Image 1: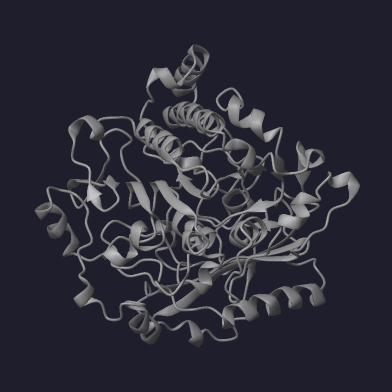
Image 2 (image 1 turned 180 degrees about the vertical axis):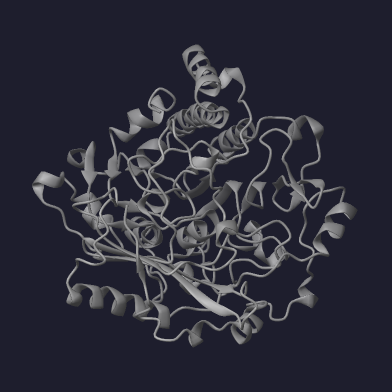
Length: 506
């Protein structure tokens, strides 16, 4: 993919690459963790993504990154994808700490038309602040062009004497892909992408071309900062929200699995930190310590902005370690030795017998990683693709009782399952650590899609809008959570620290 992302690659070479960086397995959980500094099991975002028409969002009790920064005088802007709830106006970006927002509220949409298919209709989703953008000339513009123009406006009009936080949550490279404008690609990129579409897979070629368009806008972002005189005092973080979806043309090889799995291909992704503020000796180095998406909030809020974070966050502040990172050979100070990937519970009521809760979970403890409740998955490449989509449909009958243990330092590709070989003490420690997390888990906030939502959208010229009023909320601070906790049976899983496992290996 280097042919399609030369500018990002060039800046990454002058940055600190996070070679052991982890995120969440899906979009919504990753974004919730990024902005709260908390694991999804502590925000109720552990079970799935938020779909169009889902009557829930990231609970309001959780303080988000822009809210911390606004208290210190930062101007806060967001551009791109939200995906943390839009059923009620209190859950929209402008109510969660952002001074401005341009983008879309749900998980995916057409790059040009700004719509997604929902309940047999094309439902539009493109907003400036809380106002839908219905101008045909904008709705027909390639979305990355719209975002690029907005980012340029934000930076050019910003008072450089005030601190700025820009959350640039670009749509790229999420499907459904559309061919980008040729102005965003070089001739070689266009030719190579077309060849990939023809010879390999249409989605693969479109993904590559979309990557080139993203790279184009990234270079523009850096140029805007430099032209404004803000670059020298900026910290730029680049990170993916989850592994690629092989079914849609993604490639995580040689890592196992894809988006929506707890294997490395679903949660281990690229990330780097670029800043002229970092000591020159750190630029062009690799940071090999475990770094999790929940760590961005304390690293940036405490380490960069000097703001105290909430005591209940799960993240770790790595800023001091990054400032002293002179390369792996020089020795590194690591502040994280364990990492929860996720815990999820799904009901299996397929047998006609009383329903049974099934468990899916994964955690990393030093070099060992435990995975439970995950189908095998394979090693998908840029020419061999999964036939399984990246959603929970394959788990309609609950999670399977399959167990795996891997030594990630020795086997980062997860090819050797050690579940029958690891010593009992190590296995017991893995399960007891997972059990500790399980006991701290809050009930999922997820709700079934509201069948009345579509009628509200259709009455709003086929645009999404918050369709649940404040008066109809059960509790303005935490709607629906109480009911979810009363209905949820996760505390009734017997002996959840040591479930029966069917060892699986490949």
